[in-house]
Length: 251
Image (tube, rainbow, N blue to C red; front, side):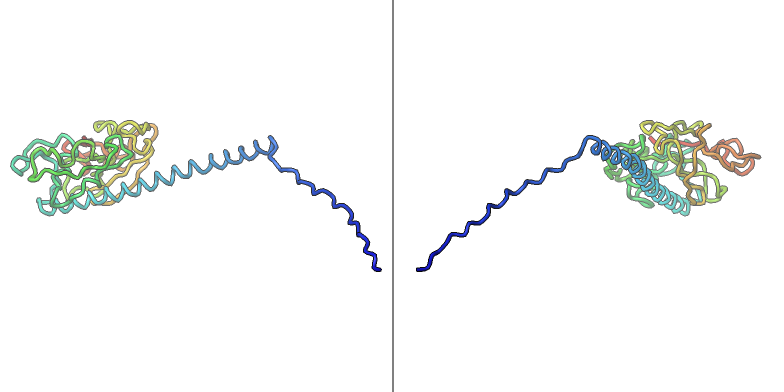
């Protein structure tokens, strides 16, 4: 008779549960500090990249406006728009603001109000232009390039034979009389924090010019013996801007 014997297996040891890992307070503080350092580096870089993108787009739009002005001049004896209109003909009264001058480009030479609009500017409404125009055109314009749809200041009395280096279009000023900017972006004339200004010259060339922090004006050759405010009207006898070349701001 075969006798079966039970094989007694040794008891298996209980499985140990691994201890849960967790951040210590010091490790958590280190991680938070690293994130804060990375954010302090990344945010200014992102802001600068975004501002540069806005500047590039604005520069392109201002160049398009300049091209439209030159096309206008080709059909008007070389003269850029500077005077109010009556029955479609220029009067002897200069426009009160740059909107009235630029409106004369519609619809023959330009048809988009959006190229005059810079959303970062206090001269402009937060919402994009509604693209409504006076049809037929009226003097002065009502719908075409209405208030809040234009960022650009404009120099009156220029023609396609003006000194090529004189400024013709620029970012709107805090003061059109003294040609000054401000650092406060919420104020008119502070679109680029008072650090620079987009300028289009009479020959259509474009530049992003630095603003002098002491005078808050753009300095450079201006027909005088030394560099100074490029928008000065005191050096007209030297081929620069004269008393007939006042600057008008946007409306």
